Image 1 (tube, one colour):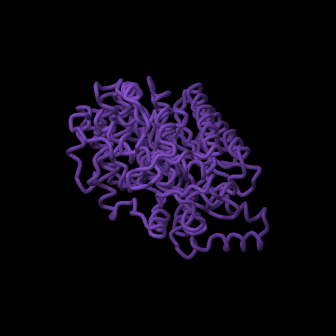
Image 2 (spheres, rainbow, N blue to C red; image 1 turned 90 degrees about the vertical axis):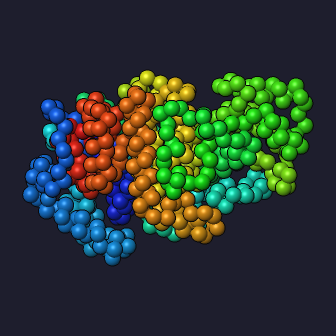
Image 3 (cartoon, rainbow, N blue to C red; image 1 turned 90 degrees about the horizontal axis):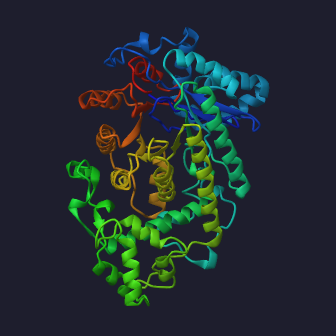
Length: 554
Protein backbone atom coordinates (compact mmCIF):
# COMPACT_ATOMS: atom_id res chain seq x y z
CA UNK A 1 0.00 0.00 0.00
CA UNK A 2 1.25 3.38 -0.82
CA UNK A 3 1.36 6.23 1.58
CA UNK A 4 1.19 9.75 0.42
CA UNK A 5 1.91 12.27 3.11
CA UNK A 6 1.25 15.90 2.36
CA UNK A 7 1.45 17.70 5.62
CA UNK A 8 3.01 21.04 4.87
CA UNK A 9 4.84 23.12 7.42
CA UNK A 10 4.66 26.46 5.65
CA UNK A 11 5.55 29.84 7.11
CA UNK A 12 4.59 28.59 10.53
CA UNK A 13 1.40 26.93 9.34
CA UNK A 14 0.79 23.25 9.79
CA UNK A 15 -1.36 22.39 6.78
CA UNK A 16 -2.63 18.90 6.39
CA UNK A 17 -3.19 18.22 2.71
CA UNK A 18 -4.84 14.91 1.96
CA UNK A 19 -4.14 13.24 -1.32
CA UNK A 20 -3.76 9.52 -1.05
CA UNK A 21 -2.04 7.10 -3.32
CA UNK A 22 -2.16 3.39 -3.75
CA UNK A 23 0.71 1.55 -5.39
CA UNK A 24 3.80 0.00 -4.04
CA UNK A 25 5.02 2.98 -2.17
CA UNK A 26 4.14 6.49 -1.31
CA UNK A 27 5.67 9.62 0.04
CA UNK A 28 5.36 13.27 -0.21
CA UNK A 29 7.61 16.19 -0.88
CA UNK A 30 6.62 19.32 0.93
CA UNK A 31 8.06 22.72 1.43
CA UNK A 32 9.50 23.73 4.75
CA UNK A 33 9.21 26.96 6.61
CA UNK A 34 12.34 28.30 4.97
CA UNK A 35 12.06 29.05 1.26
CA UNK A 36 15.52 27.72 0.53
CA UNK A 37 14.88 24.23 1.88
CA UNK A 38 12.45 21.50 1.03
CA UNK A 39 10.81 18.74 2.99
CA UNK A 40 9.80 15.26 2.05
CA UNK A 41 7.00 13.32 3.65
CA UNK A 42 6.84 9.63 3.09
CA UNK A 43 5.34 6.39 4.23
CA UNK A 44 3.90 3.47 2.39
CA UNK A 45 4.27 -0.21 2.15
CA UNK A 46 5.03 -2.60 -0.63
CA UNK A 47 5.24 -6.35 -0.98
CA UNK A 48 7.38 -8.04 1.61
CA UNK A 49 8.05 -11.69 0.66
CA UNK A 50 5.59 -14.01 2.34
CA UNK A 51 4.00 -17.31 1.50
CA UNK A 52 0.43 -16.04 1.49
CA UNK A 53 -1.21 -12.66 2.07
CA UNK A 54 -2.69 -12.55 5.53
CA UNK A 55 -6.11 -11.40 6.68
CA UNK A 56 -5.78 -7.90 8.07
CA UNK A 57 -6.43 -7.41 11.74
CA UNK A 58 -6.52 -3.73 12.53
CA UNK A 59 -6.57 -4.54 16.24
CA UNK A 60 -3.11 -6.10 15.98
CA UNK A 61 -1.26 -3.12 17.40
CA UNK A 62 1.92 -5.12 17.92
CA UNK A 63 2.30 -5.64 14.16
CA UNK A 64 0.98 -2.17 13.32
CA UNK A 65 3.54 -0.37 15.46
CA UNK A 66 6.45 -2.80 15.26
CA UNK A 67 8.51 -0.17 13.46
CA UNK A 68 7.96 2.50 16.10
CA UNK A 69 9.89 3.34 19.22
CA UNK A 70 7.93 4.17 22.35
CA UNK A 71 8.92 7.82 21.90
CA UNK A 72 7.49 7.82 18.35
CA UNK A 73 4.27 6.26 19.61
CA UNK A 74 4.06 8.89 22.36
CA UNK A 75 4.69 11.64 19.81
CA UNK A 76 1.95 10.27 17.57
CA UNK A 77 -0.53 10.26 20.40
CA UNK A 78 0.26 13.82 21.40
CA UNK A 79 0.40 15.27 17.87
CA UNK A 80 -2.76 13.56 16.62
CA UNK A 81 -4.63 14.58 19.76
CA UNK A 82 -3.57 18.19 19.22
CA UNK A 83 -4.60 18.01 15.56
CA UNK A 84 -8.09 16.95 16.62
CA UNK A 85 -8.61 20.25 18.43
CA UNK A 86 -10.64 22.68 16.33
CA UNK A 87 -9.40 25.54 18.48
CA UNK A 88 -5.80 24.71 17.67
CA UNK A 89 -6.41 24.03 13.97
CA UNK A 90 -8.51 27.15 13.39
CA UNK A 91 -5.93 29.38 15.09
CA UNK A 92 -2.75 27.60 14.01
CA UNK A 93 -1.28 30.54 12.10
CA UNK A 94 -1.58 32.93 15.03
CA UNK A 95 -0.34 30.33 17.51
CA UNK A 96 2.67 29.40 15.45
CA UNK A 97 3.55 33.04 14.80
CA UNK A 98 3.35 33.62 18.56
CA UNK A 99 5.50 30.56 19.23
CA UNK A 100 8.19 31.69 16.82
CA UNK A 101 8.22 35.15 18.39
CA UNK A 102 8.60 33.77 21.93
CA UNK A 103 11.02 30.92 21.19
CA UNK A 104 12.93 32.35 18.25
CA UNK A 105 13.19 30.68 14.85
CA UNK A 106 15.88 28.16 15.79
CA UNK A 107 14.23 26.77 18.90
CA UNK A 108 10.77 26.92 17.32
CA UNK A 109 11.91 24.96 14.24
CA UNK A 110 13.56 22.37 16.48
CA UNK A 111 10.32 21.98 18.43
CA UNK A 112 8.37 21.50 15.19
CA UNK A 113 10.80 18.83 14.00
CA UNK A 114 10.38 16.97 17.27
CA UNK A 115 6.58 17.09 17.02
CA UNK A 116 4.43 17.91 13.97
CA UNK A 117 7.23 17.94 11.42
CA UNK A 118 8.70 14.68 12.70
CA UNK A 119 5.28 13.05 12.61
CA UNK A 120 4.25 14.04 9.09
CA UNK A 121 7.42 14.83 7.12
CA UNK A 122 10.06 12.36 5.95
CA UNK A 123 12.99 14.77 5.78
CA UNK A 124 14.31 18.13 4.66
CA UNK A 125 16.31 16.77 1.70
CA UNK A 126 17.18 13.49 -0.01
CA UNK A 127 20.00 12.46 2.40
CA UNK A 128 17.77 13.27 5.36
CA UNK A 129 14.91 11.34 3.78
CA UNK A 130 17.08 8.29 3.07
CA UNK A 131 17.77 7.82 6.76
CA UNK A 132 14.08 7.44 7.51
CA UNK A 133 13.38 5.40 4.39
CA UNK A 134 16.00 2.83 5.25
CA UNK A 135 14.09 2.02 8.41
CA UNK A 136 10.75 2.11 6.59
CA UNK A 137 11.89 -0.34 3.96
CA UNK A 138 12.86 -2.82 6.67
CA UNK A 139 9.12 -2.98 7.37
CA UNK A 140 7.95 -2.95 3.75
CA UNK A 141 7.33 0.79 3.49
CA UNK A 142 8.42 3.01 0.61
CA UNK A 143 7.61 6.59 -0.51
CA UNK A 144 5.85 8.72 -3.11
CA UNK A 145 7.48 12.11 -3.46
CA UNK A 146 5.04 14.96 -3.66
CA UNK A 147 5.91 18.62 -3.94
CA UNK A 148 2.70 20.18 -2.69
CA UNK A 149 2.33 23.19 -4.92
CA UNK A 150 -0.80 24.49 -6.58
CA UNK A 151 -2.35 27.82 -7.49
CA UNK A 152 -5.92 29.08 -7.34
CA UNK A 153 -7.73 31.86 -9.14
CA UNK A 154 -6.89 34.63 -6.73
CA UNK A 155 -3.22 33.69 -6.94
CA UNK A 156 -3.24 34.56 -10.65
CA UNK A 157 -2.15 38.17 -10.46
CA UNK A 158 -2.32 38.70 -14.23
CA UNK A 159 -5.08 39.37 -16.77
CA UNK A 160 -8.11 39.73 -14.55
CA UNK A 161 -10.40 40.70 -17.42
CA UNK A 162 -11.19 38.55 -20.44
CA UNK A 163 -9.78 39.51 -23.82
CA UNK A 164 -12.33 41.39 -25.86
CA UNK A 165 -14.71 41.66 -22.91
CA UNK A 166 -16.27 38.24 -23.53
CA UNK A 167 -18.30 36.95 -20.63
CA UNK A 168 -18.04 33.46 -19.23
CA UNK A 169 -21.61 32.19 -19.19
CA UNK A 170 -21.22 29.13 -16.95
CA UNK A 171 -20.98 30.35 -13.35
CA UNK A 172 -18.78 27.39 -12.45
CA UNK A 173 -15.99 28.93 -14.54
CA UNK A 174 -16.31 32.60 -13.63
CA UNK A 175 -13.31 34.24 -12.05
CA UNK A 176 -14.06 35.32 -8.53
CA UNK A 177 -11.98 36.81 -5.79
CA UNK A 178 -13.90 35.43 -2.83
CA UNK A 179 -15.34 31.95 -3.08
CA UNK A 180 -12.58 30.36 -5.10
CA UNK A 181 -9.75 31.75 -3.01
CA UNK A 182 -8.24 29.96 -0.09
CA UNK A 183 -8.76 33.05 2.02
CA UNK A 184 -12.47 32.22 2.09
CA UNK A 185 -12.19 28.57 3.16
CA UNK A 186 -10.07 26.26 5.24
CA UNK A 187 -6.71 25.62 3.64
CA UNK A 188 -6.34 22.16 2.12
CA UNK A 189 -3.08 22.67 0.23
CA UNK A 190 -0.22 25.06 -0.08
CA UNK A 191 -0.87 27.72 -2.72
CA UNK A 192 1.84 29.38 -4.77
CA UNK A 193 1.02 32.71 -6.45
CA UNK A 194 1.27 32.80 -10.22
CA UNK A 195 3.81 35.46 -11.17
CA UNK A 196 4.35 34.61 -14.81
CA UNK A 197 5.66 31.61 -16.69
CA UNK A 198 8.95 31.81 -14.78
CA UNK A 199 7.22 30.55 -11.64
CA UNK A 200 5.83 27.60 -13.62
CA UNK A 201 9.30 26.81 -14.95
CA UNK A 202 10.64 26.85 -11.41
CA UNK A 203 7.93 24.40 -10.33
CA UNK A 204 8.72 22.21 -13.34
CA UNK A 205 12.31 21.93 -12.18
CA UNK A 206 11.18 21.02 -8.69
CA UNK A 207 8.84 18.33 -10.01
CA UNK A 208 11.72 16.91 -12.06
CA UNK A 209 13.93 16.96 -8.97
CA UNK A 210 11.22 15.03 -7.12
CA UNK A 211 11.27 12.34 -9.81
CA UNK A 212 15.03 12.08 -9.60
CA UNK A 213 14.91 11.94 -5.81
CA UNK A 214 12.20 9.27 -5.88
CA UNK A 215 14.35 7.12 -8.15
CA UNK A 216 17.33 7.49 -5.81
CA UNK A 217 15.51 6.64 -2.59
CA UNK A 218 13.38 3.84 -4.06
CA UNK A 219 16.25 1.49 -4.69
CA UNK A 220 14.02 -1.45 -5.61
CA UNK A 221 12.28 0.37 -8.45
CA UNK A 222 8.69 1.56 -8.80
CA UNK A 223 9.47 5.17 -7.96
CA UNK A 224 6.39 7.36 -7.57
CA UNK A 225 6.03 11.11 -7.72
CA UNK A 226 2.94 13.32 -7.64
CA UNK A 227 2.32 16.63 -9.39
CA UNK A 228 -0.32 19.34 -9.47
CA UNK A 229 -1.17 20.81 -12.86
CA UNK A 230 -2.02 24.18 -11.31
CA UNK A 231 1.64 24.47 -10.35
CA UNK A 232 2.56 24.33 -14.03
CA UNK A 233 0.25 26.88 -15.63
CA UNK A 234 -1.66 30.10 -15.33
CA UNK A 235 -4.78 29.46 -13.21
CA UNK A 236 -7.04 31.62 -15.38
CA UNK A 237 -5.83 29.77 -18.47
CA UNK A 238 -6.76 26.45 -16.83
CA UNK A 239 -10.12 27.93 -15.89
CA UNK A 240 -10.83 29.06 -19.45
CA UNK A 241 -9.57 25.77 -20.84
CA UNK A 242 -11.97 23.89 -18.56
CA UNK A 243 -14.87 26.06 -19.64
CA UNK A 244 -13.97 25.52 -23.28
CA UNK A 245 -13.94 21.73 -22.85
CA UNK A 246 -17.24 21.77 -20.98
CA UNK A 247 -18.86 23.81 -23.74
CA UNK A 248 -17.62 21.44 -26.47
CA UNK A 249 -19.06 18.54 -24.47
CA UNK A 250 -22.40 20.34 -24.09
CA UNK A 251 -22.62 20.83 -27.86
CA UNK A 252 -21.85 17.16 -28.48
CA UNK A 253 -24.42 16.01 -25.91
CA UNK A 254 -27.10 18.22 -27.47
CA UNK A 255 -26.47 16.86 -30.96
CA UNK A 256 -25.98 13.16 -30.22
CA UNK A 257 -27.98 10.28 -28.80
CA UNK A 258 -27.14 7.38 -26.44
CA UNK A 259 -26.54 3.90 -27.76
CA UNK A 260 -26.61 1.21 -25.09
CA UNK A 261 -24.43 -1.25 -27.00
CA UNK A 262 -21.43 1.06 -27.25
CA UNK A 263 -19.73 0.09 -23.97
CA UNK A 264 -17.22 -2.77 -23.96
CA UNK A 265 -18.48 -6.01 -22.46
CA UNK A 266 -16.46 -5.75 -19.24
CA UNK A 267 -17.96 -2.32 -18.47
CA UNK A 268 -21.23 -3.36 -16.89
CA UNK A 269 -22.11 0.13 -15.76
CA UNK A 270 -25.84 -0.59 -15.94
CA UNK A 271 -25.52 -2.51 -12.69
CA UNK A 272 -24.33 0.63 -10.88
CA UNK A 273 -26.77 2.12 -8.36
CA UNK A 274 -28.84 4.82 -10.03
CA UNK A 275 -28.34 7.23 -7.13
CA UNK A 276 -24.58 6.94 -7.67
CA UNK A 277 -24.61 7.07 -11.46
CA UNK A 278 -27.18 9.87 -11.60
CA UNK A 279 -29.70 10.67 -14.34
CA UNK A 280 -27.19 11.99 -16.87
CA UNK A 281 -26.49 9.78 -19.90
CA UNK A 282 -22.85 8.71 -19.99
CA UNK A 283 -20.79 10.57 -22.57
CA UNK A 284 -19.09 7.35 -23.68
CA UNK A 285 -22.43 5.90 -24.83
CA UNK A 286 -23.30 8.87 -27.06
CA UNK A 287 -22.83 8.95 -30.83
CA UNK A 288 -23.33 11.78 -33.32
CA UNK A 289 -25.02 10.68 -36.55
CA UNK A 290 -24.87 12.54 -39.86
CA UNK A 291 -28.38 13.84 -39.19
CA UNK A 292 -27.21 15.19 -35.82
CA UNK A 293 -24.21 16.81 -37.46
CA UNK A 294 -26.28 18.51 -40.16
CA UNK A 295 -28.86 19.66 -37.62
CA UNK A 296 -26.09 21.24 -35.52
CA UNK A 297 -24.67 23.20 -38.43
CA UNK A 298 -28.14 24.23 -39.57
CA UNK A 299 -29.13 25.42 -36.09
CA UNK A 300 -25.95 27.49 -35.85
CA UNK A 301 -26.51 28.84 -39.38
CA UNK A 302 -23.00 27.78 -40.35
CA UNK A 303 -21.98 28.62 -43.91
CA UNK A 304 -20.64 25.15 -44.76
CA UNK A 305 -21.15 23.54 -48.15
CA UNK A 306 -22.32 19.97 -48.62
CA UNK A 307 -18.87 18.94 -49.78
CA UNK A 308 -17.29 20.47 -46.67
CA UNK A 309 -19.83 18.69 -44.47
CA UNK A 310 -18.98 15.38 -46.11
CA UNK A 311 -15.29 15.98 -45.55
CA UNK A 312 -15.70 17.01 -41.91
CA UNK A 313 -17.99 14.13 -41.04
CA UNK A 314 -15.79 11.58 -42.79
CA UNK A 315 -12.82 12.78 -40.73
CA UNK A 316 -14.71 12.00 -37.51
CA UNK A 317 -16.02 8.49 -38.27
CA UNK A 318 -12.76 6.59 -38.47
CA UNK A 319 -13.58 4.57 -35.31
CA UNK A 320 -17.14 3.51 -36.19
CA UNK A 321 -19.04 3.62 -39.49
CA UNK A 322 -21.47 6.56 -39.63
CA UNK A 323 -21.10 7.32 -35.92
CA UNK A 324 -18.96 10.02 -34.27
CA UNK A 325 -17.45 9.49 -30.83
CA UNK A 326 -16.88 12.43 -28.54
CA UNK A 327 -13.07 12.40 -28.68
CA UNK A 328 -13.21 12.68 -32.48
CA UNK A 329 -15.60 15.62 -32.26
CA UNK A 330 -13.40 17.29 -29.65
CA UNK A 331 -10.35 16.88 -31.86
CA UNK A 332 -11.97 19.00 -34.62
CA UNK A 333 -13.06 21.64 -32.07
CA UNK A 334 -9.57 22.40 -30.77
CA UNK A 335 -7.92 25.71 -31.70
CA UNK A 336 -6.84 25.93 -35.34
CA UNK A 337 -8.97 22.90 -36.19
CA UNK A 338 -11.90 23.11 -38.68
CA UNK A 339 -14.90 23.19 -36.33
CA UNK A 340 -13.18 25.66 -34.02
CA UNK A 341 -12.81 28.07 -36.94
CA UNK A 342 -16.36 27.43 -38.21
CA UNK A 343 -17.95 28.07 -34.79
CA UNK A 344 -16.33 31.48 -34.33
CA UNK A 345 -18.93 34.27 -34.42
CA UNK A 346 -21.88 31.87 -34.63
CA UNK A 347 -24.88 31.96 -32.33
CA UNK A 348 -27.18 29.24 -31.04
CA UNK A 349 -30.94 29.42 -31.76
CA UNK A 350 -31.25 31.00 -28.29
CA UNK A 351 -28.84 33.79 -29.27
CA UNK A 352 -25.86 32.58 -27.21
CA UNK A 353 -22.31 32.37 -28.54
CA UNK A 354 -21.71 28.84 -29.80
CA UNK A 355 -18.10 28.60 -28.64
CA UNK A 356 -16.01 31.37 -27.14
CA UNK A 357 -12.47 31.38 -28.58
CA UNK A 358 -9.61 30.89 -26.17
CA UNK A 359 -7.66 34.04 -25.45
CA UNK A 360 -4.28 34.05 -27.16
CA UNK A 361 -2.43 34.49 -23.87
CA UNK A 362 -4.30 31.52 -22.43
CA UNK A 363 -3.77 29.35 -25.48
CA UNK A 364 -0.05 29.94 -25.17
CA UNK A 365 -0.14 29.23 -21.42
CA UNK A 366 -1.95 25.92 -22.01
CA UNK A 367 0.53 24.94 -24.72
CA UNK A 368 3.37 25.72 -22.31
CA UNK A 369 1.69 23.63 -19.63
CA UNK A 370 1.37 20.69 -21.99
CA UNK A 371 5.05 20.92 -22.89
CA UNK A 372 6.00 20.92 -19.20
CA UNK A 373 3.83 17.88 -18.56
CA UNK A 374 5.44 16.06 -21.48
CA UNK A 375 8.91 16.82 -20.11
CA UNK A 376 7.95 15.38 -16.71
CA UNK A 377 6.30 12.33 -18.25
CA UNK A 378 9.26 11.72 -20.57
CA UNK A 379 11.60 11.74 -17.59
CA UNK A 380 9.28 9.45 -15.61
CA UNK A 381 9.41 6.90 -18.43
CA UNK A 382 13.21 7.21 -18.67
CA UNK A 383 13.43 6.48 -14.94
CA UNK A 384 10.77 3.75 -15.18
CA UNK A 385 8.80 5.74 -12.59
CA UNK A 386 5.11 6.39 -12.10
CA UNK A 387 3.54 9.85 -12.16
CA UNK A 388 0.43 10.66 -10.13
CA UNK A 389 -1.58 13.63 -11.41
CA UNK A 390 -3.52 15.08 -8.53
CA UNK A 391 -7.17 16.08 -8.71
CA UNK A 392 -7.98 19.68 -7.84
CA UNK A 393 -11.03 21.95 -7.74
CA UNK A 394 -13.89 21.14 -10.13
CA UNK A 395 -13.42 24.35 -12.10
CA UNK A 396 -9.91 23.17 -13.02
CA UNK A 397 -10.67 19.47 -13.33
CA UNK A 398 -11.83 19.25 -16.99
CA UNK A 399 -8.51 20.52 -18.33
CA UNK A 400 -6.59 18.40 -15.81
CA UNK A 401 -8.49 15.31 -16.97
CA UNK A 402 -7.78 16.26 -20.57
CA UNK A 403 -4.03 16.50 -19.93
CA UNK A 404 -4.02 13.27 -17.89
CA UNK A 405 -5.76 11.33 -20.66
CA UNK A 406 -3.42 12.82 -23.24
CA UNK A 407 -0.46 11.57 -21.21
CA UNK A 408 -1.98 8.13 -20.61
CA UNK A 409 -2.68 7.74 -24.33
CA UNK A 410 0.97 8.44 -25.07
CA UNK A 411 2.80 6.72 -22.21
CA UNK A 412 0.59 3.86 -20.95
CA UNK A 413 0.73 1.61 -23.99
CA UNK A 414 2.85 -1.14 -22.44
CA UNK A 415 3.22 -0.16 -18.78
CA UNK A 416 1.25 2.17 -16.56
CA UNK A 417 3.36 5.26 -15.98
CA UNK A 418 0.59 7.89 -15.64
CA UNK A 419 -2.18 7.85 -13.02
CA UNK A 420 -5.11 10.27 -13.00
CA UNK A 421 -6.94 10.99 -9.74
CA UNK A 422 -10.69 10.53 -9.33
CA UNK A 423 -12.54 12.19 -6.44
CA UNK A 424 -15.40 9.91 -5.50
CA UNK A 425 -17.38 12.54 -3.61
CA UNK A 426 -18.15 14.19 -6.97
CA UNK A 427 -21.33 13.27 -8.80
CA UNK A 428 -19.52 13.33 -12.16
CA UNK A 429 -16.84 10.83 -11.15
CA UNK A 430 -18.61 7.60 -12.27
CA UNK A 431 -19.21 9.02 -15.74
CA UNK A 432 -15.66 10.37 -15.98
CA UNK A 433 -13.97 7.16 -14.87
CA UNK A 434 -16.15 4.93 -17.06
CA UNK A 435 -15.55 7.20 -20.04
CA UNK A 436 -11.79 7.22 -19.47
CA UNK A 437 -11.61 3.44 -18.96
CA UNK A 438 -13.68 2.76 -22.06
CA UNK A 439 -11.63 5.19 -24.13
CA UNK A 440 -8.42 3.50 -22.95
CA UNK A 441 -9.87 0.14 -23.97
CA UNK A 442 -10.69 1.06 -27.56
CA UNK A 443 -7.56 3.20 -28.06
CA UNK A 444 -5.33 0.44 -26.77
CA UNK A 445 -3.67 1.83 -23.66
CA UNK A 446 -3.87 1.06 -19.94
CA UNK A 447 -5.66 3.36 -17.54
CA UNK A 448 -3.91 4.42 -14.35
CA UNK A 449 -6.26 5.62 -11.61
CA UNK A 450 -5.94 6.86 -8.07
CA UNK A 451 -9.19 6.79 -6.10
CA UNK A 452 -9.73 9.34 -3.35
CA UNK A 453 -12.89 10.49 -1.68
CA UNK A 454 -12.05 14.19 -2.02
CA UNK A 455 -10.30 17.12 -0.38
CA UNK A 456 -12.12 20.34 -1.34
CA UNK A 457 -15.63 19.77 0.01
CA UNK A 458 -16.09 22.98 2.00
CA UNK A 459 -14.62 25.14 -0.74
CA UNK A 460 -16.63 23.45 -3.51
CA UNK A 461 -19.95 23.67 -1.68
CA UNK A 462 -19.46 27.27 -0.62
CA UNK A 463 -18.47 28.29 -4.14
CA UNK A 464 -21.50 26.53 -5.62
CA UNK A 465 -23.76 28.36 -3.17
CA UNK A 466 -22.10 31.74 -3.70
CA UNK A 467 -22.15 31.48 -7.51
CA UNK A 468 -25.53 29.78 -7.80
CA UNK A 469 -24.77 26.49 -9.51
CA UNK A 470 -25.49 22.90 -8.54
CA UNK A 471 -23.44 21.45 -5.70
CA UNK A 472 -21.04 19.04 -7.47
CA UNK A 473 -20.70 16.81 -4.40
CA UNK A 474 -22.92 13.91 -3.37
CA UNK A 475 -25.37 14.94 -0.61
CA UNK A 476 -24.28 12.17 1.78
CA UNK A 477 -21.19 10.25 2.81
CA UNK A 478 -23.06 7.02 2.12
CA UNK A 479 -23.33 7.93 -1.58
CA UNK A 480 -19.64 8.87 -1.64
CA UNK A 481 -18.76 5.50 -0.12
CA UNK A 482 -21.00 3.72 -2.63
CA UNK A 483 -19.32 5.56 -5.50
CA UNK A 484 -15.89 4.71 -4.12
CA UNK A 485 -16.58 0.99 -3.88
CA UNK A 486 -18.33 0.81 -7.24
CA UNK A 487 -15.38 2.49 -8.93
CA UNK A 488 -13.15 -0.07 -7.23
CA UNK A 489 -15.25 -2.83 -8.81
CA UNK A 490 -14.81 -1.36 -12.30
CA UNK A 491 -11.06 -1.04 -11.86
CA UNK A 492 -10.65 -4.50 -10.34
CA UNK A 493 -12.18 -5.94 -13.49
CA UNK A 494 -9.75 -3.89 -15.54
CA UNK A 495 -6.83 -5.20 -13.48
CA UNK A 496 -8.00 -8.78 -14.02
CA UNK A 497 -7.92 -8.13 -17.78
CA UNK A 498 -4.49 -6.50 -17.64
CA UNK A 499 -5.94 -3.14 -18.69
CA UNK A 500 -5.33 -1.07 -15.58
CA UNK A 501 -3.45 -0.36 -12.38
CA UNK A 502 -5.02 1.65 -9.62
CA UNK A 503 -4.39 3.03 -6.19
CA UNK A 504 -6.80 2.82 -3.26
CA UNK A 505 -6.00 6.07 -1.51
CA UNK A 506 -7.89 5.77 1.73
CA UNK A 507 -7.64 5.71 5.51
CA UNK A 508 -10.99 3.94 5.72
CA UNK A 509 -10.42 0.50 7.24
CA UNK A 510 -13.66 -0.89 5.78
CA UNK A 511 -12.63 0.16 2.27
CA UNK A 512 -9.20 -1.40 2.73
CA UNK A 513 -10.69 -4.68 3.96
CA UNK A 514 -13.21 -4.59 1.13
CA UNK A 515 -10.50 -4.31 -1.54
CA UNK A 516 -8.34 -6.99 0.10
CA UNK A 517 -11.26 -9.42 0.16
CA UNK A 518 -12.29 -8.61 -3.42
CA UNK A 519 -8.71 -9.16 -4.57
CA UNK A 520 -8.85 -12.61 -2.97
CA UNK A 521 -12.16 -13.38 -4.64
CA UNK A 522 -10.90 -12.18 -8.03
CA UNK A 523 -7.66 -14.10 -7.73
CA UNK A 524 -5.50 -10.98 -7.97
CA UNK A 525 -2.04 -11.74 -6.61
CA UNK A 526 -0.90 -8.85 -4.41
CA UNK A 527 2.74 -9.76 -5.11
CA UNK A 528 2.35 -8.90 -8.80
CA UNK A 529 1.06 -5.37 -8.25
CA UNK A 530 -1.72 -3.62 -10.10
CA UNK A 531 -3.62 -2.69 -6.96
CA UNK A 532 -1.93 -0.31 -4.56
CA UNK A 533 -2.94 1.25 -1.26
CA UNK A 534 -1.94 4.66 0.08
CA UNK A 535 -2.24 6.74 3.22
CA UNK A 536 -0.76 9.95 4.54
CA UNK A 537 2.49 9.61 6.40
CA UNK A 538 1.95 9.67 10.14
CA UNK A 539 -1.85 9.64 9.95
CA UNK A 540 -2.72 6.00 9.38
CA UNK A 541 0.46 4.02 9.93
CA UNK A 542 -1.39 1.15 11.55
CA UNK A 543 -3.10 0.44 8.21
CA UNK A 544 -0.03 0.97 6.04
CA UNK A 545 2.32 -1.27 7.99
CA UNK A 546 -0.26 -4.03 8.32
CA UNK A 547 -0.76 -4.03 4.56
CA UNK A 548 2.98 -4.16 3.99
CA UNK A 549 3.37 -7.01 6.45
CA UNK A 550 0.49 -8.81 4.76
CA UNK A 551 2.18 -8.76 1.37
CA UNK A 552 0.12 -6.00 -0.25
CA UNK A 553 1.47 -3.05 -2.21
CA UNK A 554 1.10 -0.17 0.19
